[in-house]
View 1: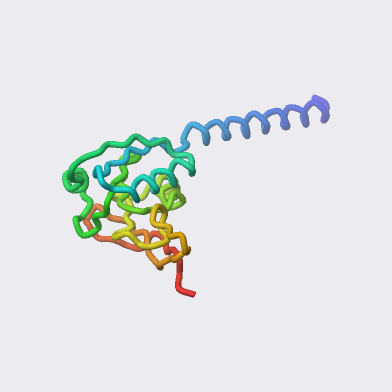
View 2: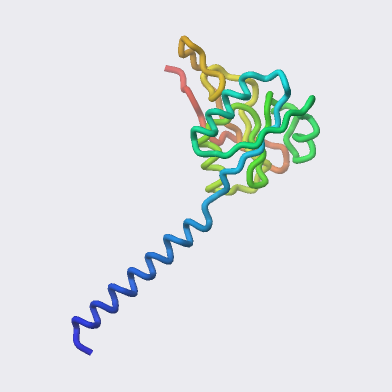
Amino acid sequence: MNPTNLNRRLLMGAAVFIGMGGSACAQTRPSRNLTVFKTPTCACCDAWIAHMRQAGFTTTITVLPSLQSVRSSRGMPDALASCHTGLIDGYLVEGHVPAPDVIRLLTERPAAVGVAVPGMPLGSPGMETPQGHKEPYDTLLVLRSGATRVFARHNPPA
């Protein structure tokens, strides 16, 4: 076989291999379908849902009088409870978690219940203020044991 034909075959083989890798990546893209459980009186939940939609998530909203059963049935400790709970790809997303943290969770797929931002820190998604006030806060990774560790830090003090 002449060298020119061999080079063409190698290039074609490499192109096919690269193309297959790209479609394999596309097939394993994490879900963007987020179910949000919220109470009927929560306005900041709607702002967080808008944040998630702007980041490319498709949301389904379920309004419940209490979210305690949703959290406890999936292992989210009551101490981390917030005003809304999301469910995506088997993970819970508790409170005002930024979309990039959810994307990272879905990409890394740790053995965990999910992530949580306890309380309602100013400056977190859905808790923005007209004055732009921001409190430092952490997104916590909630392990199956109920223990937590810092997953991401936000708005560090100046």
